[in-house]
Picture 1 (cartoon, rainbow, N blue to C red):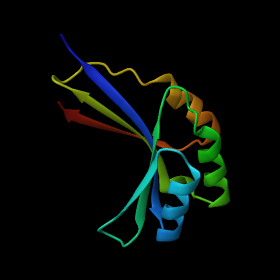
Picture 2 (cartoon, rainbow, N blue to C red; picture 1 turned 180 degrees about the horizontal axis):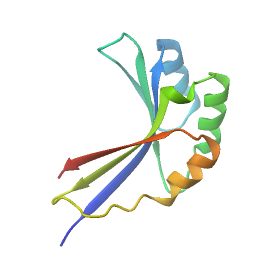
Picture 3 (cartoon, helix red, strand yellow; picture 1 turned 60 degrees about the horizontal axis):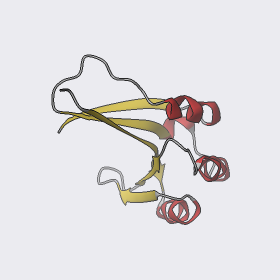
Picture 4 (tube, rainbow, N blue to C red; picture 1 turned 90 degrees about the horizontal axis):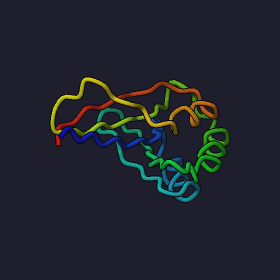
Length: 110
């Protein structure tokens, strides 16, 4: 039997440290970490089917004046075998209605 797990998160790819700290205080489930390549920070917000943090995420996005090129929706797919088809969760469509950014898909073995 093929088991496929998907996790969805919204990422801010080019934050300064203050923006990272603010993200964790204003958006439920948010984290941030340093980028070793450029001295900036990446913020990540785990998303659930309920999208209970979408309003806070949207307000943060607007207040911080984030450029669309500096964010993405990361869909992480974990599977024992290489799947031939991956269904994207509906919450991605709902999120794209609020913030229309690029989608990144990461395939990882279980």
